[in-house]
Image (cartoon, rainbow, N blue to C red; front, side, top):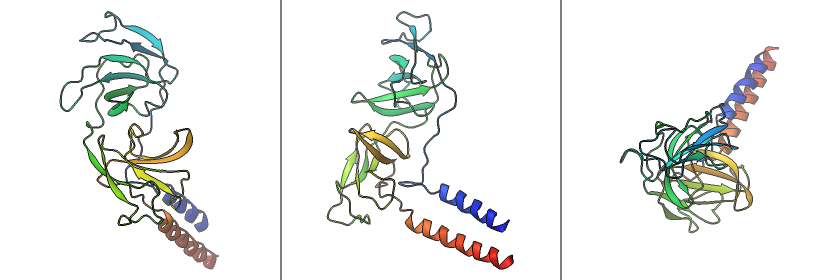
Length: 233
């Protein structure tokens, strides 16, 4: 019994390890939209039967509202509404994103015809940030290395990219535009390749938190617990 409890504790601890930052990705809601309001030049104020407003199906399951302005600087005027393209929305809420090369206030929701009204904003308009930059980063990562410099991130996001999820893999660091929409690590296709990308918004946050020491410590604790359990048998 004690060994089973030890394994359960170890599993919970390992799952809790997060790379790149202490922030976690926001999980999407389970509801999926099938239809959205659509307008390329939406009436102000918006109403469903307004001129140019129709309904469209949404293969992605997400509806959007987009604006070039948004809180907290001003009241958002959503000039376009419609079905979200694949990969644009990952959670219900609003955030600033680079869309079609333009800094855009994007609101996402996943209920039928949900893009009729305002959605509570979840992230502020991005401000510039400073990130570590290296095209081939040293292993282990050392911020004082000659290979490491600094770069400015106009949208506030810092990145770490690798072909492997292992903390000991070769990585690049920087401020790649249009890549990040939430904090955390995930697999995606980037420039035609399967890439493990970590995103964060803090100052010089893209160091990457190695899980090696944590894993060794957890395994050591598990061995101690297993040894104690055998002695009690």
